[in-house]
View 1 (tube, rainbow, N blue to C red):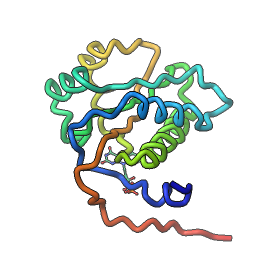
View 2 (view 1 turned 180 degrees about the horizontal axis):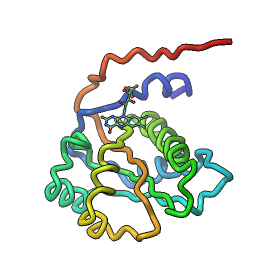
View 3 (view 1 turned 180 degrees about the vertical axis):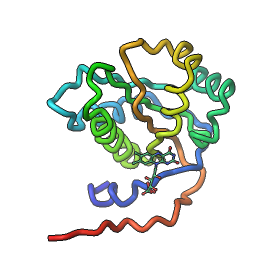
View 4 (view 1 turned 60 degrees about the vertical axis):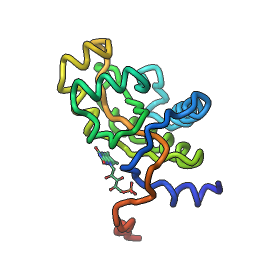
Length: 163
Ligand SMILES: Cc1cc2nc3c(=O)[nH]c(=O)nc-3n(C[C@H](O)[C@H](O)[C@H](O)COP(=O)(O)O)c2cc1C
């Protein structure tokens, strides 16, 4: 796809098929995330946590996360080291947007997902289950998968501009 087409085609998908995303596609999405700009180039402070297969299924089952991720078979969480609080949201935003654009380019649906990140970070049991080290904080996530519907919210993509 041309860049402009990808940008316009990337809309939040909230309807997924259960089909797993292939490993090569996941790797391309992760690579796109890693090429995002992050503050001061401090990539070493960030961790990408891939949740899929049985791990994601048991998490969804135990904590009723399904509605938050709309049944998507893949979630990638962005974690940041605790000692670097400043600009972590911006870093996660850039990384997730790159991953969403790559997912779109590969014909997959995606949705920026803050609510699952919130669920995970507010739930000590989940943190234990995922073996997330103390020094990392869950910042945000993205749910990805094959779409079961092209339906999107009727959002107007207009932002006020002044010159
Ligand atoms: C920081 C951030 C957090 C978001 N969190 C959620 C979320 O938890 N659940 C959800 O369904 N959509 C979430 N979204 C998606 C937005 O609702 C969506 O991008 C926006 O309404 C524009 O629609 P579009 O993505 O279809 O263009 C989030 C988006 C951003 C940027």
